[in-house]
Structures are given as structure tokens and as C-alpha cells.
Image (cartoon, rainbow, N blue to C red; front, side):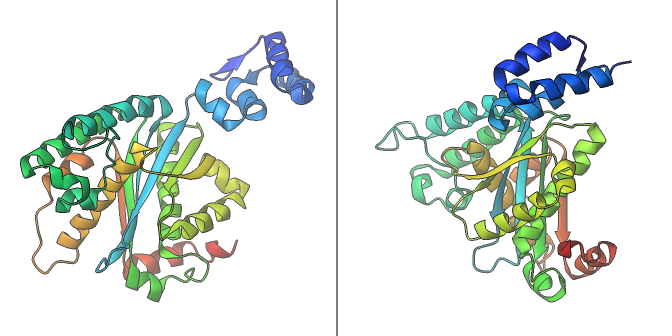
Length: 313
């Protein structure tokens, strides 16, 4: 029995491969003849650049933003949204349309506003043009736009946080990785566990917000993964890059999640008098499968004991 996605028409593959990448045509067909089949996905990986491959084969896009650079933040965290590229194509114009409609007639130019949650929460920047009721209506509509871009089997959300002081005191890898680099690696680990559970083998293209205080730690984390081919395979790493919130509304959504999680942690884990979760926080947590982890002193010690010296590989 041939595996799913296999094809027996080797002549077709020979023609396609000759057209796209003549140098590898003979070796691909030779392997196909030896095995009796060739996987469409494996052929595409060998022949096509990632940006082309993602247009014709289902691939995932994951968008990651950070929180914890502001004064008084006790934790630093990475927040992620993952979905298929096709679903993100639906999401982008919907998100932008919601913002455009909310500011219609309120801004001097026609540029679509960028949603920065900290400005939204304090009614500053472009959000000073909206009343409180208009801001509430906006957040409901933005979360609605996000819901349209996710499905239970092909989408994932989540965040990994680490207590800054505890990381500095307890993490034996702190000389090799900063706290945000650790959060990023753990996010990729959660994505891999999710993909394993649902038998997803597709590549994931990661986009991080560029120009932030932790950009060097993103580079640190991703270069570490690239040095280890087993991790590249495990994490389904197709590509990674930096992008702007203006270009990628998905990063605006990740910013919203990061801010909500930061508020939740400060109102529960670090508050003398615990506060109930915000309605917007609960709405975000319920739209698709979600992971969450907070590494404090005890959990960092346990992690170091379970995975000794992984950072020195």
C-alpha cells in the first residue's frame, strides 16, 4: 500500500522536475523507482523554494510577539498564533477592514491603523479618537476576525512566560540564552508537540516582530535550532524572519494575546488580591487549542534537572 500523498506516475514527476530543477531530476526519479513511489511533499521539499512550496502545499504560519519590556513587568513572555497560510489570507483583510471601519472619518489619512494593545488599553495614540464604547466594540470585532482564521485542527495559540528574576537566579543556560530566547524555544517545542499529536508534518514559517528589544535573543534561539538538523525536523522549521505589525496583522493579534496574558499573570500570580480574568482574555483563550506555561524558580529547577546541559549541544 502506498503512503498517503504518494504518486505512481513517475514520468509526470520526471517532467515536472526537469522543468523546475534539472540537476536533481535523475536522482529523484531513481529514488522513486527504487522505493516504488515518491511523496509529493518530499519532491516539493527537494525541488521548490519554501516561498513557492507554501503556495501549492498546505503550510503553517506562526506569528510571535513579546511582552515584558515595560517597567514593572515581572515576567517576559512570547505569545504565538499559528494557522494555515490559506486561513491567514482570509484573516488579513478582515482584520484590516475592522480597523478601517472603526476609524472611518476619525483620522486625517486613509492609512489603516496598526493595533498596538498598550495604546488601545490606555486610549492613546490613534485610539484617543475612539470612545470607551467604541474601543470595546472594536476589541470584540477584532477577536471575531481572529476566530474566522482558526479551526480546531489547524490552528494553535499559546504563550510561554518566565519570571525574570528567577531566570537570572536559576537558569543554568542563562549565559547561552536570554529569557526571551528560552521562551521562543519553548513555544516551538509546544508547536511540535501539537503537530505530533495531530500528525501534522507540514513546515512552519515563523515571523517575529522586528526592531524590538529582544530581537537579538530571537536570533540566538533560531540560530541554535538551525545548528541542529534534528531540531529543525522536530520543530518543522521551514523558515523564520522578522516582520512589522503594519505588514502582518497576525503580529497585532499576537500582541493582543501577549498583553492579555501579561495582565492576567500580574492580576493572579503576582497580586496580593487576585483579580478575575478579563472578558477579552477569556474570549481569546477559547477560540482555538491553546498552550500556556509559566516558568518560575521551581519549574526552572525541574526543567534543568529533566534536560541537563541541552544548551551546550
